[in-house]
Image (tube, rainbow, N blue to C red; front, top):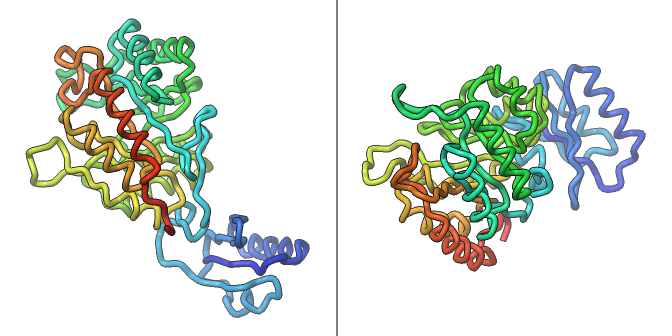
Amino acid sequence: MIITLKKNADKKQVDCLLGWLRDHKVTPHVSAGESETIIGCVGDVARLDIGLVQALSVVETVQRIQEPYKEANRKFHPEDSVVNCSGFKVGGGNFQVIAGPCSVESEEQVIAIAKAVKAAGATMLRGGAFKPRTSPYSFQGLGKRGLEILLQAKRETGLPIVTELMRIEHLELFNDVDVIQIGARNMQNFDLLKEVGAHSKKPVLLKRGMSATLQELLMSAEYVMASGNPNVILCERGIRTYETATRNTIDLTVVPILHRLTHLPVIVDPSHATGVARLVEPCAMGAVVMGADGLIIEVHNDPPHALCDGAQSQTPEMFAETMSRVNALRPLAYKLGE
């Protein structure tokens, strides 16, 4: 249920309303925007008398909502959420680019790539220490040593690091990680989502599952938020279809659709979406024009010899060219409400 308050509503009366809602086992979430203040109600709202609430002098309107996701719903939070990633803000007009290798292979490799992508304009460093792979015989990452290498790259470049968490037991290893990534395969690992929500306030980069609907993606975000962590960034990384020309089918329409459904930032991963390095740039440009709040791009200094996903990795030179075109397009980006 959404309660919209009148302008200049009396604070004491509003506090009484909030207390009454809590007495009825409903959790109120107050969102004060530039033009209006709303109260989003989570809980057993079916038993509340809408007419009684509507009759209060501080209430402008009351409406029930049908969507199962509440805290991620833009109706609960009309203003764009801005997620602070160690000083770099995502959402609300703030655009960030995350770049780096698919997997951490060596200290020399990661630090060299980190310096190159920073020089080209990237604001965060990605890299997989733990790697979920389809084949049990493929490179699975360096694990804890990979995290240490990422942190060394952070110390040398100042770039916040983004890396994937695969197991609840590893959460304590991520104390110095700036953004926790939940990969496509774990998007519906609800126990993992609840643990990240309950035991960390770090930004969570939540990737869309390869066959997930947008409602399923938003419900996964809801798990994190309902458990106590509001700092969620959604990521479109392509979905599985019958098409075989690309690794996945990139769905750029989700950017403006999600911006209407949710207040959470939305970024795009054109590397995993296409699986082809030469397609990363045009898809990144398309994502910018569609209004994405950021990009996550794989960059490797020697793609033919990469231990993971070399075919979709840009070289540092390609990435620098992509950044120049992305920055030229940003003034043309679609914005909700325009």
